[in-house]
Image: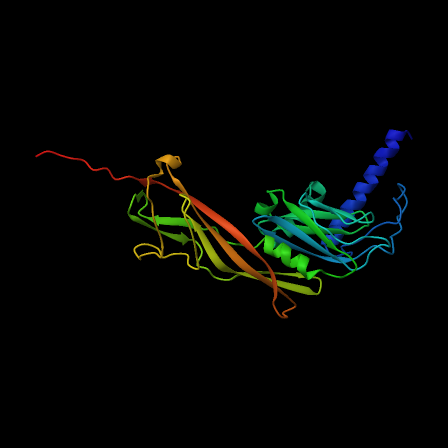
Length: 310
């Protein structure tokens, strides 16, 4: 057999092995972590590696992307601790590197996909493969996966860093978008304009995740709102304002039209949130505050006096 033919046979063998692992693992026939001590010779059986790590997998999705958490219950000698990356893969040392990819659904997996897809509506299957043999199939929301920002976070040795999990949750919190509204819709020089935030009422926002035997809860609540009216004037409040027809306490009087500002002033509100987390339902611990900013363009006109004769 020529070298090209032998190489094709080896690739075919590896592909068949991976296909078997994907189907068997997702069907619950074998653990989600299986490896071989050596690459099998075509036509011969492979020997499982006894030190292959097991683990649990969970998925956290949010507006900034998707994080796949892997809690490894064993690790091969010499492997290093965990870290994260935003490229769809993570390297955690010379002994373990993991990569997440969208699963290629071919004819051989179509029956499995048709059976599993209804159990995961709105999601698509991805595979996580590590060079130490860990393997898993996870389902990721289609909308989140299309952004391409998929991270893999590996915690080795069976230990989970709750702060790392809390920070990931914090990064993906579902903070609603705020639309800044104003009355009047076009401002007038020397007359007050009222502003308020629409889409968020100042309520506490929280998220949770379970990784192995560790559950982590994260909560944030607004501390202050810093308003900027686009003409160099700012105001820090604890209020989101009141919608019209009520008189809002977020009020500003412009001294000149927005013609010199390009036709409209850039009005912004920066929301600063206090943040905290807890582990397994215990006491709350503080995290560093986070901020989010929202803007809108607000035109302001100058009233002109016109003399008319009778």
